[in-house]
Image (cartoon, rainbow, N blue to C red; front, side, top):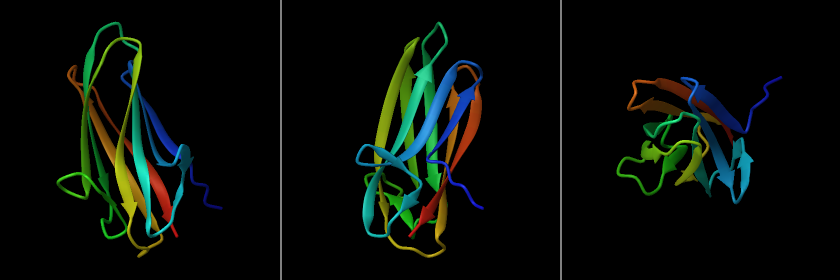
Length: 128
């Protein structure tokens, strides 16, 4: 049995919580339909007592299936956020599900901060 989660979450360096999910309207989804448009949401929260700069680079595995609509490169979305202490900041980029080739895809998000913390999230998606 293959169970897909609707989000990928990680607590980076005991100070930054990050969540990656694909939204259809306001609902997180794990299955995308060809010909539909979604939002790729990154929500970051700073649990540290100081402000942190966070860079998140998200990329898709196969841009023939899913692609970012408003970025220079449809395979990647680069997001930079300054997080004050005890604050949560959401960011959303438009993601188009263009066609079904393999039935699966993934969004890989690499996160790094100005205090040398880094980690990676992988959000697996089903394409119908």
